[in-house]
Image 1 (cartoon, rainbow, N blue to C red):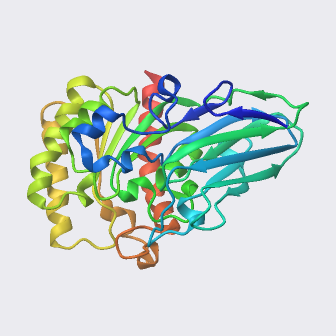
Image 2: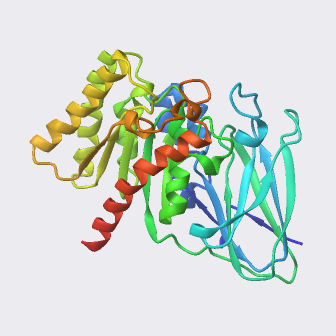
Length: 337
């Protein structure tokens, strides 16, 4: 078997900003973590990251070594310490299986997959919850490996928000709403969900402004400790993004929730005010999505949550049903210009 590091061509790592330059599996560089120290661990995790390549090997092995391995009260090893492997065209890919630790002591693990000898795309969704040390790909000695087929929309969408944005608490990384949208629309994306710690810091907005993206989606109101905090940060965060990205489409969302109470309604008013002010100022590239709308007309909406806060796979699918048409319209409009 021939071994390839994901740091070297023709393998591509997508969903991890600046990986081609740094070769580091981290969402945030050290200088940003110094400014926002609460993200010292979360910023090094890579939810939304994907290892992509094409091969005609009938057998290939994925070997992973983790730097961290920790218990998550809401998610199993399958959900958040494992990599999920798909083969074939991105919009119609088939699930081959997962690469998972056998227990909470095994930081090194591997799995061998079998497929046809056709040249086809392989997409590996990275573990959500852990810092990854290395990943290696092994293929048969007489097989070929090549760069992956590009996404139809190669400039990524950038999502910024809470643990829900990050994929909690889906049963696997491919069930997160932004992963579903990526697969359906054939679009690259960055996942900047930070569990409990995305709070509209302007240092994060400044870092986001160094990244090239096609659409910005943000919904961090779950992480704002109070309505007053959200009011003090939400519009300034948007305006900071606009300083460097005056025309990029921005989608403002509120937290997904079965039925809004007074606190959720107050937070929605804050987010809606940022949107309304932008529209009043002549901004034609802003969009608003009410998080209560994800489940409002669904009779079994209570079945969409694990703990009344985090959506399960059904909840994420219902979210994607609402968000995807908005993203699709934006991408089609942008492509037509």
